[in-house]
Amino acid sequence: MVDFLISIEDVGSHHFQVEIRLAAPAAQQLFSLPVWIPGSYLVREFSRHLSGLRAEQGGRTIELTQLSKNRWQAGNLAGEPLKLSYRVYAFDTSVRAAYLSAERGFFNPSSLCLRAEGREAEIQRLSVQGLPEGWQVGTALPFDGRHYLAADYDELVDHPFELGAFWRGQFEVEGVPHEFIVAGALPVFDGDRLLEQARRICAAQIAFWHGKHPKRNELPFDRYVFLLNAVEEGYGGLEHRSSTALIAPRRDLPRLGNAEVSEGLVRLLGLISHEYFHSWNVKRLRPAEFARYDYDVENYTELLWFFEGFTSYYDELFLARSGLIDEARYLKLLSTAISGVLATPGRQVQSLAEASFEAWTKYYRPDENTPNSTISYYNKGALLAMALDLSLRGSGHASLDEVMRKLWAHSDGGPISEAEILTAVAELGGSELAGQLRQWVHGHVDFPLASLLDPLGVHWGFESAPLALRLGLKLGDGLQVKQVLAGSPAAAAGLCAGDELIACNGWRLRKLDDVTLFLDQRDPLRLHLLVGREQRVMDLALRMPESAVSVPVAVNLSIAEKATARAQTLRHAWLGG
Image (cartoon, rainbow, N blue to C red; front, top):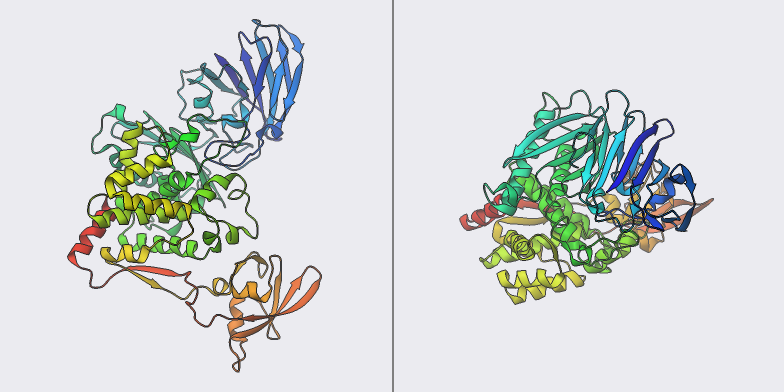
């Protein structure tokens, strides 16, 4: 057994105190801290926040030798109990590390708990002490009244902890208790409504994977916990085997006396749906390369398009299937997703397989050239899932739902490879479709979504794109250029990231849309932009696109006015599951 004691040492300086105790250490006991956290594919170097590392044995200080950035060796006497102690600076407000202040605490054990090498398969026992008055502990890790118990180190680091005076509520789905913890909510927060909305999503997903009224032991967990930190600004989530850590704007939460399902609330419900779906797709059903995590280095796979992209397809789809949004609203969400991918030149440069493999160096390290050289395996992966689903449905024989369940049954909820995905598609949709899927994954083509949606009575149209996108610009604060899209009028004019737009055709600019007020009617497509670049002022000539929809970045999906009865049946089967 490995014992951990997490103490609230100093909320003012944001430090946890950590102790590790081994009753019978090795003669040269090694310890290491993960450099990344599964689900977030970036080397984050958690060890940079450790300080004051000490080792004691029998009251004597034991020499510690640092072997690398995240690894230490204790030269102790074998068999005698060993204690390590250290401080961890915790001021990361994300879901990936640790945070401590006078208001709340949060930690992933992967950023606090050193791994006793050679002892990973033993029980890991953790306790928390020094909680301020009124604080509670929220986690899905089993508690025996004194300690939180994990079967091994992998299980320990897969359970985040929320600490504080938070709100908590519960509901059940198929006899399985679900707990929802919310920190930082406004006084008008409607907890009962959030519980009901989350319950409907969870019920729909459990039925998706296991059918109606499954046996309790068929589910991948016997308890599930949502940990939501409500903030002024922020959004994100990280999946775990029986819980998830979420961040969302507190203004997006449902409010007492207000039945509106706002755009912000839909976004939050989509996040809840996404992370819950991961309980099956990536935490159990996962890339073969992730059968065993190596916490010391990057773990590469070409399959994030499936595990993140397909999950992104299903997250909002389950909002429709659970009745939280109607068809029209779902198609609006889909329109935005399609428009975003089509507005990204990088989709013609990087394949989905490459985007997955290069997540460690590109997706989590965006810069001004990112949209020109990369594509999101989340966003384009979701469109790939839709293209595959509609192709299967169009054949009249199957759907992506059946592919997912087939893979779950085939792998017994375990690791899978691309070959196994292609085999499942071939068995349900034919070898030609499996070959098409492989081309979509490893190529750079746009998917034929318009033709796939047409048999379902969904009309594909275009709206006038925002001026910034028509020009190929993404702006930051004010009129500061953040990104210039490849092949756009802005790129042809020589605009660069960092430029500041000052004037157009001799008129001072206050906002970008004002350029339409300053057009020269003798040549309305030509602009002279005065641009600030570092300490210089430059005059650049830019030509406006001739048509408001000449760049297909504003797709508008709608239900066709004269959809056939068959089209309605197909659409309802798709959106209703």
